[in-house]
Amino acid sequence: MDSTKPLVIAVTGLNAIDSPGPGVAVIRALRDGFGSNIRIIGLSYETLEPGIYLHDVVDKTYQIPYPSAGIDALSSRLQYIHAKENLQLLIPNFDAELYNFIKLGPTLKNMGISTFLPTMEQFEARDKINLYQFGQKHGLSVPEDRAIYSVHDLYTCAEKLGYPLVVKGKFYDAIVAYTMEQAQKAFHKLSAKWGFPIIVQQFISGTEINVAVLGDGNGNAISIIPMRKLYITDKGKAWAGITLEDDTLIELAKTFVAATKWKGGCELEIMRTATGQPFIMEINPRFPAWIYLTAASGQNQPAALAKMALGETLEPFTTYTSGKIFIRYAWDHITDISEFQQISGLGEL
Image 1: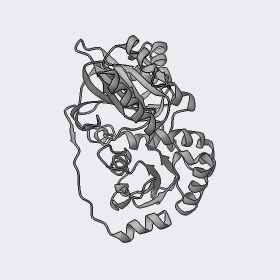
Image 2: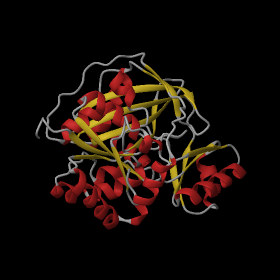
Image 3: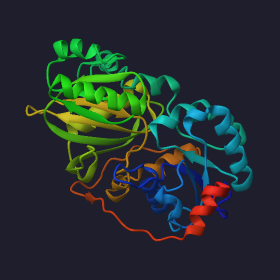
Image 4: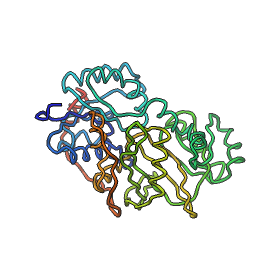
């Protein structure tokens, strides 16, 4: 790579709403890691994703087709963008888009665009549908669950798992149901939004902890940062959190990476019971929205991922600062109708 030219990185997930995408936080970490020698190309789905208009964060934005449009549509659009921007690295940040980007990996590599993503086998093994079996296989504590396609299956779930039940969408969202009526309502809401199957999971009471993890694809955890939620929105998202010093959580993350040989960033959603036992509730196959906290606490995971994607071999981080707190906030960003019209009409800004 020519060090005199800026590193060109494309990033998705530019929505910074009450349930934010990771993109803006990933970009902040990349800018911390690479300084001014970087050019950020935003990839957006909606015209009102705030990152599009944050010009000190994103240098230029292009709209890309929704994941449902398929691989060919995405490939065609990326070829157009690459011809203009000469992309060197692409970091996708949404669960729903990862299937297409993983499938396109070889094509992107032939184009000269690096990625650092899990394999399809890794991606599917940690899917909500397969998580309980995954835990059984690798000796990890995971709540029992059922993948269902009919609202009538909720009765069997209630008999097997008891109340409350956690009803989860295929990609996102989880609703705790204390009655059958609530469970049915959650089923219809989440199936309408995300499709099937719906996952019904055993409820575990405890303290919510998230762990940001970066694996090198060879079984080594390059970075592990545990975070406890301090403030949670009504959508269950962390609006504030604090880094923890916790060997149990770090060992759990190392076990996961060693078992899967995970490649790239991921987030372990953990519920720690009153007795101290950590249950893995979900494994998100990409960086979390709070990923900038890793940079602030001494382990810049997005920058480390970028370096590995471009061929560097990194040693695992060994230290970080515990007690670092992030607090998310809302901000009214002002732009002009001409910018909105340009991204809406031309698909780029």
